[in-house]
Length: 113
Image (cartoon, one colour):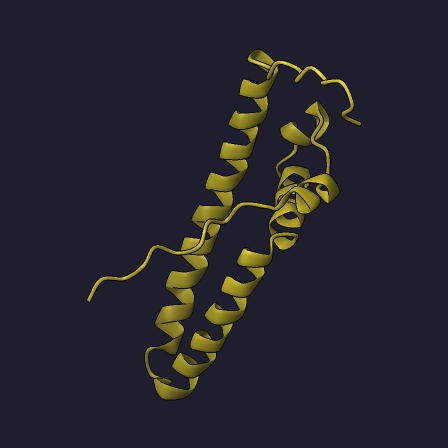
């Protein structure tokens, strides 16, 4: 049985517009950067849908297998911490790369807003 790939976790343009704007002070502070990343992710409809699905399966596991539940929680906590660290590092790297290699401004064409 082949599984289809998960939906992309990208933010639609409206979510990107409402996301917090990064500045150098946020990049240097893990907590501020983590909050900004969380706000960006929570604005993403696909990420919210995936979180709801995870919560449903987690609740089912808790009820079905109370003996391994504590082990699952420990592993999940460690994995979430690792991903949180990786996301902050990745956001910091992407911000710095954007400062070193800024995207060229797109010229406005006649009749565009």
